[in-house]
Length: 103
Image (tube, rainbow, N blue to C red; front, side, top):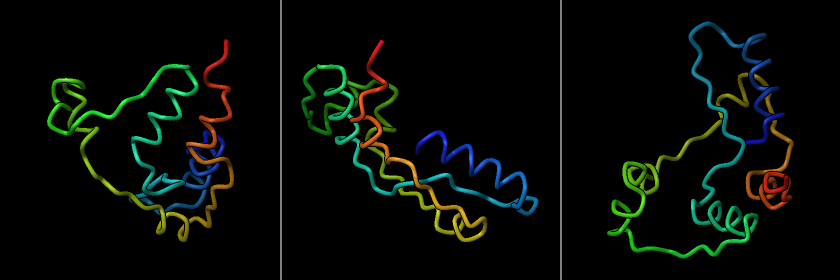
């Protein structure tokens, strides 16, 4: 999620969310990790290769659990409750813009 969409959601949460509300700051659903890795690899100018799932533990160490976990999240209720509509570039578009990989 773009930082400006997140900032707007935090403001709305402070101003409008009822006490105890559970909010999900998800601008996009179902972005594959492979797409994220490809965008980062492209931005850094390094090759990205797939590995078999059975090699994830060895390759990623303790992060393997997170790289193989399918944990879908939705902000549908948050959007409805707070009338929040993320309008900034999505994760892959933002990564492909290249500004994270300069300097």
